[in-house]
Length: 245
Ligand SMILES: NC(=O)c1ccc[n+]([C@@H]2O[C@H](COP(=O)([O-])OP(=O)(O)OC[C@H]3O[C@@H](n4cnc5c(N)ncnc54)[C@H](OP(=O)(O)O)[C@@H]3O)[C@@H](O)[C@H]2O)c1
Image 1: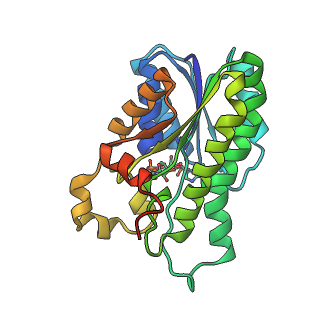
Image 2: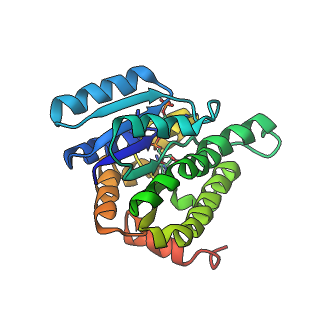
């Protein structure tokens, strides 16, 4: 574990993973749209740990030059060890409300960008004969939620795609790790416009912290795990997928 590219690093789970990896001495390339938040995080990490921290303000939906990210990493790092596909946005709406632009935004941010950035990274990991590709998915991949169809679909597709990729790249020493967080206390709900609903519901009491998720992720990278659940009931939900109504 020497270097990592993390998407969606400006807040929540991605931010917590960046801090946790820095603790392990990993050099970082951080990506998200908000430059100010990235700068703030990079300064915080540099003040705490002796690691190299770079950041690029990058909109994964609009700027589709994913090779650029890899080129910047290669110019600054000796290897590409970890890619964390974490950026994601929520969306709740009935079928009447969904527009073609919504579909495009959700699928580019939550799925297509991860596949294409991974495509740019894999040739270098193959050359090195090692690497970890971490995908922050969601338990919703196994549990449909009313009005959350677009988000669910993006996450189910991510689960399916990266499970297949795991078989494809295993022989090159590349480990693909699928992570399935449940409710996690981040800005995700505020950004999806349902913060108030969540705040006032029982869900708030059962939320994990992003730091808890990040610790599980870093442990999984070290132990070369493949499927990561936060709790036993998440694992059970995944196993019962298809049996539940
Ligand atoms: N919170 C939960 O309950 C939960 C549960 C299961 C799975 N997840 C998944 O965990 C991942 C992280 O979410 P979070 O909970 O940490 O939420 P968050 O705090 O809102 O973080 C989302 C991150 O994605 C970035 N992002 C969003 N759109 C982007 C774009 N177009 N280009 C580049 N970066 C973009 C955001 O940064 P900028 O705004 O700076 O671009 C931010 O850093 C997501 O994939 C989410 O689906 C969350």
